[in-house]
Length: 522
Image 1 (cartoon, rainbow, N blue to C red):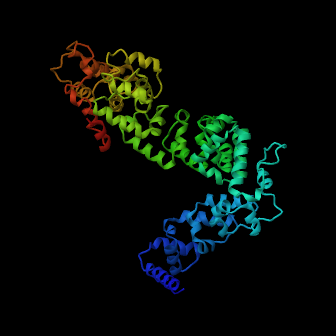
Image 2: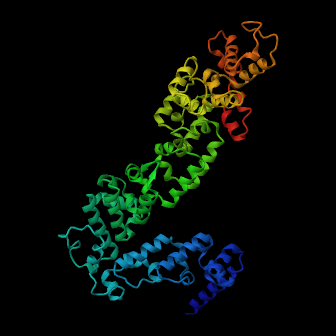
Image 3: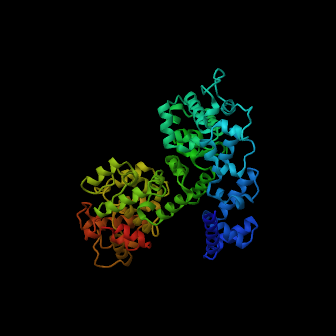
């Protein structure tokens, strides 16, 4: 007895010594504000339950709302601060599970000792303790929450139910239900529990409602639910919000999308709404969203950060209007690694498929000799977009492919040249002279400056040629002629004299320092 008194005294004195520590003022203020307690009590709570220090205002509000929904006052946080270490959804599920099992008057103490109640005590012990009424048939009560039981099925457990725990009984019911609904074998069930252990502690009513929505409204086949057993975790209320409020992505019914990409069913409706707003803010088209539904499985913060980052990288920014642009955002880390690695190999003709496509396709490109843009589809698309989509892609391809090296020029360089030319020439002028986009800007700029100054030592076809009488399109044609004249019209005018700095002309004028380093990473 004397030893116990010494222990209690030392523990009591230690607690008050801890009160002198530099506890976060913000945590103290938050507890005082939301729990209506004084500063000393708040500090004592923080010492007693350090997890309270990690709670921000949103966490505290969420817990208080949850306690209110469950019929508890906010004093529960003071009396049972350990409950704050649990997520609100965990508190709700524990409360519902205990109610389903027949414990009608669920208290905060029951929530804290939940695992002990359902796993360590038999149903008979719980009845003798008065937690469950003797007249309650727990097996039938639990089975009643599953609305699709066959009428012929009345007994799941052979023997005395009172000798097993609530945990074991619930597992048998869940296993039998999934066996009937999904044709799930015993091995598949326990393998699923090992991968998704929280299924064991979900309310039966929630599991039943979730399966009803997946099968009757989303029409997901049994085999797909079996192979994606995490769908049992889906919140039915969240699923309803996605189905009836979010409704579609890029004009495609959300039901079809969830059938193809079940992971979307697990995303929060509010997160998906926020992602949609972010995509609209960055002018991402519906077509791009249709090509990458997986973008909605990321967090809104991640999507925003990656889109902002893409704006500072010329190789990504060039594809911003491409239908498959979101693939690069979704596989951002992979695309960045490939970009840096290929630049170190001096490969700069990078198509979107190379940056975000399959590993096999990328490895083939990486090992192949030379540097080319594949079939040139991305090149034609980007030129078409830059020209305002007023010209047919087939006509642009026909015009640009006349040049022998049309797929050997980096797309980012072509975009850079276009941005410079559009300041002085119209889209029609550039379209009439499409191959000029393949030439380095420093060469084009030098020729344009010479023509504008009309220097006398430049020899043209006719010495009496009056440059002022030429149209803009004709001037651009003349620039193209002069660029190739010294190369005997072989097409070699597209190459810089200094091959080691083939992109220096457009990189040097780029304002973003990070993008500058990426392009020059050798």
